[in-house]
Image (cartoon, rainbow, N blue to C red; front, side, top):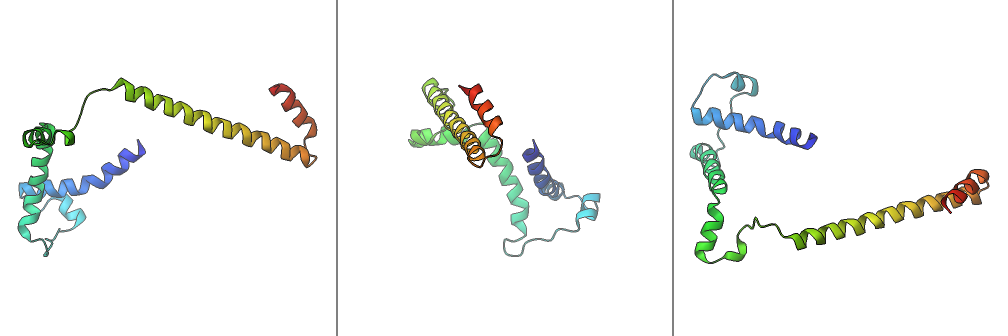
Length: 137
C-alpha cells in the first residue's frame, strides 16, 4: 500500500502537466505552484505535445491486446502473452514455496538451539536452558 502511494505521488505531477499541456490551459493553479514548464530544447517543442498522445495510443493498444494479435499475424506466436492458467506450474510454485519455508524454519530453529547452547556453555541461564530442552523433547 505504501509503495502504491509513493508511485502515485511521483506520477501525479507529470500527468497533471501533460493534461494541462494537451488541453492548452494557461494560468492554472498547478502552473503557479509548480512554475512554468519549459520545453526541452534537445527533443523539440513537438515532442512534448506528441509524446503524451503516443502514451495514450500505446495504452489503448495494450487494452485491446493489439500486440498479441500483431505478433500472431506476423508469425511470432511464442512471443505473445498467455493468459491461460496452468495448474502444473501452480503446483510447482507451491512446492517450491513450501520447501523454502521449511528451509527457513529449520534455520531459525537451528539458530535458536545454537543460541541456547551458547547461553548454557557460558554458564548463564542454565536452569532455563534445561527447562527449554525438556519441553522440546
